[in-house]
Length: 357
Image (cartoon, rainbow, N blue to C red; front, side):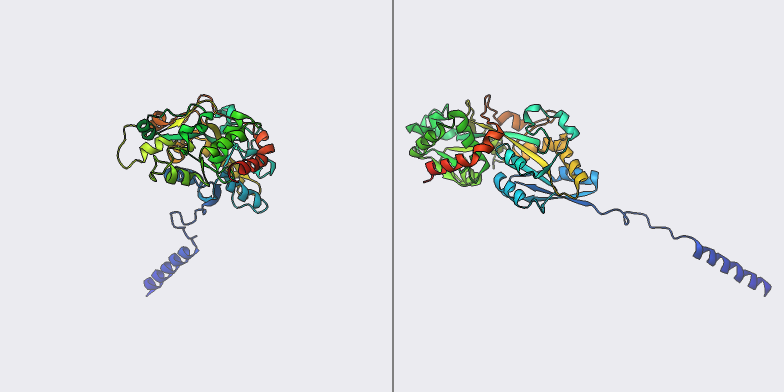
């Protein structure tokens, strides 16, 4: 009996000790912090590999949400209209044609990214680093090589050639009020003919049957004869990097690109695209990390075959297809961003009166 009492006492003691012992938390990630959400506004042409974004998300315990907001001009308008209650933390896609307006509206915070040390000075157009360069490309006229070969027609050698009778009705362009490539091409004509002469050139183009549409997608995929739309115009305002896309996305393997670009002096306009941290963000630290990531090798090497643009970081290696088929003009047109900002609305209005009315 005594032994039973002692045994019961011992067991009760063990149970009391177990009850007093702190509970052990289960192993695993049940108590891990939730990913921080970073929202990025972009234009509709933005594209990036899922694996590249996953790399950033994993490194920073983050979730990146992209909000596509139209063409570059529409994107900027939305950012300006919502600047008191920003829709995102970061904006990507404003280009040098709209840069001065973005800076004048004060939508960006300054950020001296350490990655800027790797970026050539020619792309750094904002001394306060509110808008940081990410990529560049050239807005050029693409032409249908088969059409010109079959007709025995020499391709235009200058912008002025486009108004010659042999090219009547062969060119489709985008409206500069609604399209970034359209705006870039308008700026190229201003760089070539000057403020006093560009409207005369456009009047000649109109008389020569130039076709004007609202956006690049319509111009390229509906009107352009070398695209899937098999349209009526064998020349289209597009990009010097469009020919590689025709090879890469062809339904059957191609030995050569069916299109090429006109790259004579001032026939292309150099476009630089920027990213910036939006005023009012609640995620500044994470936004800075994303800007750094965009300028890093992984993101920069992904862009050429995603958006068919050139990386601004010279350490990024270009894909073979890009090197083989993309064309870069030796003397692209360019205008000072402040000069553009001071005259953009006037140029667009007079262009509209000359070409569309």
